[in-house]
Length: 156
Image 1 (cartoon, rainbow, N blue to C red):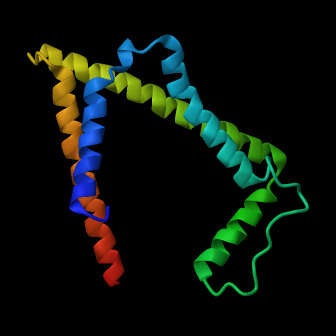
Image 2 (cartoon, one colour; image 1 turned 135 degrees about the vertical axis):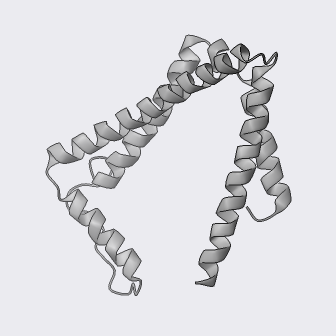
């Protein structure tokens, strides 16, 4: 984040979204979309990266001779080596990415419900507000931590 006001705004938006939107109240098709849409995007991205989607086998990007960055060259070499992997390995990577994202999304719905039940059993009359406030604070802490790490990496 470039400023404190942006960090606070992101924190407020994230906390408010947790407070206002209860996944258990969503229709089944919305929860299904919440799980499947990111999975499809992950699979498409992995398919593009592995060369299964988009580019043909003959049109792999070659490492540019004018690049002086070792990091860029290493990334290009890794991408070319992954694109030359057997087709079965590439399909397994695409399917694995989709499954991993689906599991994470389903887990997030389960954790949300479990935390809400736990807070209710502990006597909270408005568990979504407590969850929203906690999420806002955690978001703010994460942004502060990332900004601190970005500042220390700039000095190196």
